Structures are given as structure tokens and as C-alpha cells.
Image 1 (cartoon, rainbow, N blue to C red):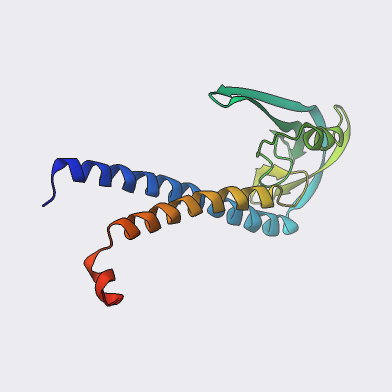
Image 2: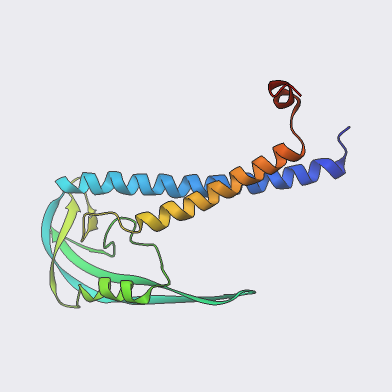
Length: 175
């Protein structure tokens, strides 16, 4: 018989599974979308542009395990299509992923110096969409994080099924 004491933990565990599964699937969906955009950008037009700002942003967070600082290359650039001026900050697709590796982000930022002329790739159907590098970055990191989220979901499901297998599973296993 189901009582409130057995229903609430089940709902909480189901919520955890759902959150982790959706987080993993969201990351994979975002990565696939970025691959699609990178492929589509191979047909985008180019225009000259100019770097307005280039640097590395840092964000420090503190929790019970200590302090962590993450870094993100930030490049703001301007470009013109027809008589319209635009400003954008996308370096590459998926380049909005922070990392603890300052040197890698500084290396990206150093490729784009303020006032430097650059070549901007823009979507002819929507010139406000632009990119400096037509590639997807942080692929490995995104896949690893998505796999961890999905793995946690599957692990929790496995533990729940092992502790309290549903009748159909017991019938299937002949128990």
C-alpha cells in the first residue's frame, strides 16, 4: 500500500532523474545545433569588421569544496552589412563555455586585438548572426558533461530498479 511516506521519496527521486536527464539531453541538443550552425555557416557571406574589445572574463565561485575560478574569452566586434552596423561577440559556435584553463582562453583572446581588422562571417538571411571562426569549440567538454548527467540518471534508475523491481521486470527475468 502506498502511503505518503513512500510516495514523496519516489517523487523526489523521479525529479532528480528528470533534471539530470534533461540537463544531459539539453547539452547534447545544444551541441548538435551548434554543429548544424557551423555547417550552415560554410555558406555565409563575409564582411570586414573591427575588434572593439578583447579580453578574458573570470568568474569566481565559492562553495563547501572551496573556491573555483573559471575563464571565458570575450571578443566584441563590429561589422557592417549594406548600410546597417552590427556588433556581436560570438567567436565560434559553442564558444560560450567557461573553463578553468586561463591560458587557453587567453590564447583565443590574443588572436583578436582591439582595433584590429578582422573577417566576419554573417548569415545573409539574418546579418545580426555572425561568427569569427566557423567551427564548434568545447566539443569534448560538452560531451563529457552530458555523459555525466545522463550517467547519473541511468545509475539512479538502475539502483531504484535493483532495490524495488517492478512486477513486469520480475516476470521477464522469471523470478
